[in-house]
Amino acid sequence: MSDITQNPFASTHSLDTNPFDDPIPQQTVNSAHLEELSRRERDLERREQELNQRAEHVRVHGRNNWPPFYPLIFHSIQEEIPEASKPLITRLYQLWLVLMGTLVINMVACIFLLTSGSSDGGKDLGASIGYMFVIAPLSFLLWYRPIYNGYMKEQALYYYLYFFFGGWHLLFSIYMIIGIPSTGSAGLIQTIQMFSGGHIAAGVLGLIATIGWVLQGAGSGFYYRQIWSHHNAAGHTMEQAKTELASHGAKAYFTRG
Image (tube, rainbow, N blue to C red; front, side, top):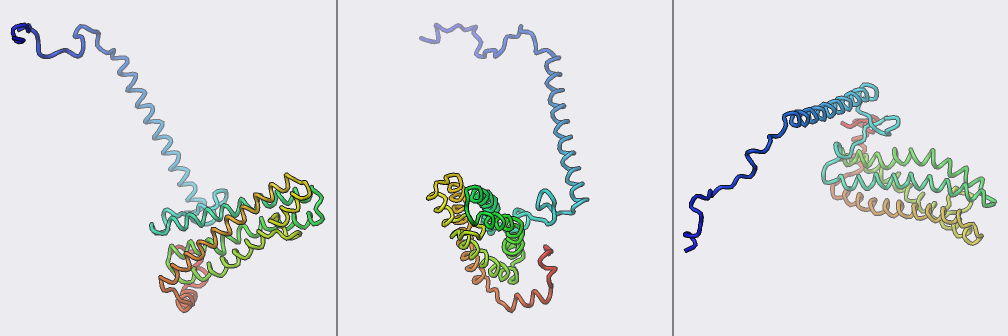
């Protein structure tokens, strides 16, 4: 019955667009095409500039890329560290960065200790500045870089270097957490004295520095134990370390091969 009421001449297909509408202007199409070409050209120029910058960097510094402001060594966790060990080395590098930030905050806190009238403020400030210029590079070279090389090359010598200097770093962290006056640390004792003396700004900075020392010290201790377990599981021995030192000498520390 419904078939009778339908228009037999009606089309079963509908037009999506009106055939009598004006076509899209050719000028609009050309404009969009030119804009796309312009975008691609800018992208190619940017890539070319980046490649030129990299080539100039390699010409001047070789592959060295760290530190960024004056490259002396090549440092790339993504390229040099095995996939399974990348998270560990990344965390250790982040802990080293926390150490750098803590050293800066500690120095600023010691400035406030001096201005707040601390009898040992001058000694604290002088020592804190010394830590900035001594602990910062030595921590990178003596415990971070060895374990970086250790996981990259899986050689026993680097692990023993890390355990020795990393152990000293753990002791130094505990020493800085305590905050003995005149030692250059705005740690716990100094922080308590500043708060009890009503020097809030110095106390707050000392508290931040103390938290920084605790975080990087606790993190270093946690990974120290994890690396020790890996070292034992890998079967590294002192004899292997001696053989590697005799075979490669000190140059092994600076080379990636």
